[in-house]
Image (cartoon, rainbow over all chains, first blue to last red; front, side):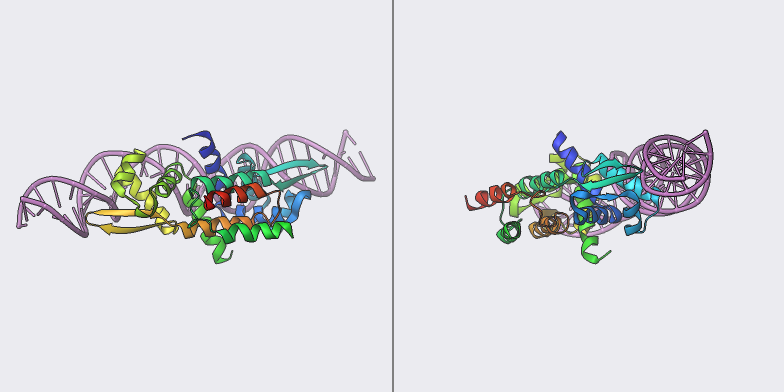
Amino acid sequence: MDQTAAKVIEALGALAQEHRLALFQLLVEAGGSGMAAGAIAAALDVPASSLSFHIAHMERAGIVQRLRRGRSLIYSADYGAMNRLIAYLMENCCNGDHRCVDASTCSTFEERQIT
Amino acid sequence: MDQTAAKVIEALGALAQEHRLALFQLLVEAGGSGMAAGAIAAALDVPASSLSFHIAHMERAGIVQRLRRGRSLIYSADYGAMNRLIAYLMENCCNGDHRCVDASTCSTFEERQIT
DNA sequence: TTGATATTTTCATAACTATAGAATCATTGG
DNA sequence: CCAATGATTCTATAGTTATGAAAATATCAA
């Protein structure tokens, strides 16, 4: 297995869990300013130690970033990592075949970007 | 958790493993005619029972399909499932933010489709 | 039918992942 | 310095996933 595939597997695994997928979505909504660990735990209704376990998993996989502000650790989504993950899936798991990702998926998305 | 998220988690989990990611890529390369279980096991150098375990996982997740031809079971990639997975990631994990999936990811892909 | 072939299912085991309370560490305000 | 706050790490336990040999199932050809 090449190293790129290994990273992709880590990222997929990091998203393939109920709390972690919800957490990533939450961070995307929160945007660039991110969210403190405690606020995340409250929003997801998960004990602090469990949240810490899951978010460490995601950090290892490189899909979230953290920085400290005072006593709080602020987490935010790593958009670049998600970009690379989606690009990989498109190129390696779809083979450029329109049956996989059809035009509407991309064009709808591009329209939304322009707007 | 809504039912869509549950399906997405299943699909992500089905791809988040060395043999299974390689297997999906193999099926995409193989195209619409698919591949027999034995040929897949040989290509991936995995014992038949292990292959069967992994591919059953993928079938449960709805990312591969199978049909019987004589003694062989022919598996093929479900492009629609991959399309829906990618669309979900774009919409729910990127929030239409260009920092996530930038134009080049989509436009490169669309050029390749037209070619 | 019988034997060969293709594949799955069963089984035991090892490895990994999730959960959450308790202990610990880091930072700040008084 | 000390207490309070925000968060992680430790620990134990339960649950899930991966592995591969052996047994069972399905199909075909002679």
